[in-house]
Image 1 (cartoon, rainbow, N blue to C red):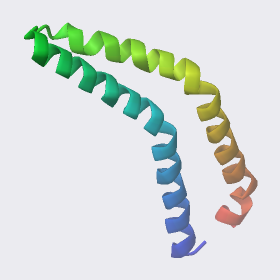
Image 2 (cartoon, rainbow, N blue to C red; image 1 turned 60 degrees about the vertical axis):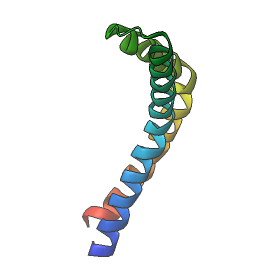
Image 3 (tube, rainbow, N blue to C red; image 1 turned 180 degrees about the horizontal axis):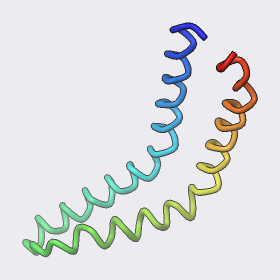
Image 4 (cartoon, one colour; image 1 turned 90 degrees about the vertical axis):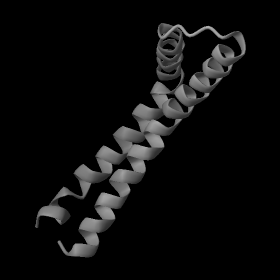
Length: 89
């Protein structure tokens, strides 16, 4: 196993992490932005108002995006495990 192979494997791992986390992070970002705009226009400064919608939105996002995320993770894991002998030996 040479350095190019290690760098390629690490790059694929980081890319897969970003792709899997992106939908939930973007959803939380959008909800947070909407809540912030709502708080600024109504001048309500309740701290829990920012967290509860994000938590609910991310839970709904996990229900919606969960099968896709799991499929991507399992396919990446199977790729790693099928090439394990090439990585070790």
